[in-house]
Image (cartoon, rainbow, N blue to C red; front, side, top):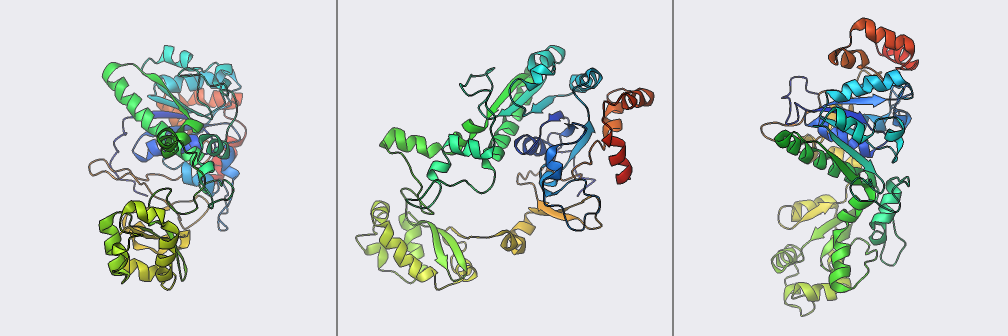
Length: 419
């Protein structure tokens, strides 16, 4: 972690983070990685994902496990029991000085707490208020399912991605990572930056509404054009492209690889490297259209070559000449020099351990305002006194609030243990 890194492109942004689970925290972490001051407001018991495993076997503190660590770096944590009036007043004071609020509660929760967008906008007209919900918010466009809960797999199912994922002729399949959370998180971060830019020009904040289901449909853009232009309902295609070949996975001696060489130039180069110069002249494979029309035969021919080589042998042969990628697992990724060179596997401090843990780095690289990992994920309530002092509360007032229980009984135990 770099403690002397540049402030980042969003270094002047204060974000109040009322999110939990994956979508919301991933969104706010993206902002934090680029320099935003993200204050994570947690209930007294903390974001439930603090306990989602695995815990590192050498972690003697167990303040949080891998799930929480991977999506909450660069943030500060305070605890507030928002069921109490005094806690809500403290939160309102924080929001008055903020640029952005992000939440991913079910529709209606913030209204019940007296913290609706309308209430906050009246106090802070420049405020950008962002939500990530399963089916969106009626403030932009209403959905008949607007008050339904949703998780990653629900968004994947509703948004269409499961219907085109899986083996050819097989059952629909869930994508491995939580794209139903992470894609809307990315789009929400984009929407927030757009809205902040607008607020900087005009002084007018706005409501940013991102639906998990809408986000997945946007990711599946090709199903719409296939249906609208071709009248087809796409189905799972396995690991091959729906209308291009070669474009997919091929067997190797030690696993699988991917090859993309569908256009004439790339296909000729692939055939040259495979010592199959006759294939481009073959009437079955002479154009991109007939290559797809005869894709079963073509894949079988090319597979006869790849299955006799290892992934590394094919990487040496094809890398940089035609688009090629070995199918890596995480152990392969840790060993490949690309990810170290690009700082995509980085050491991050873990409370309760002498050694750091390795987590995913920041994929958005910038020359003048590079993002950075400035701090580990926070302990529960670790920065409560610090944040409230910045908001103008005197130490005596903070102690009065603590005595009233608005931070919860667990706060002092957590900070004492950490110390």
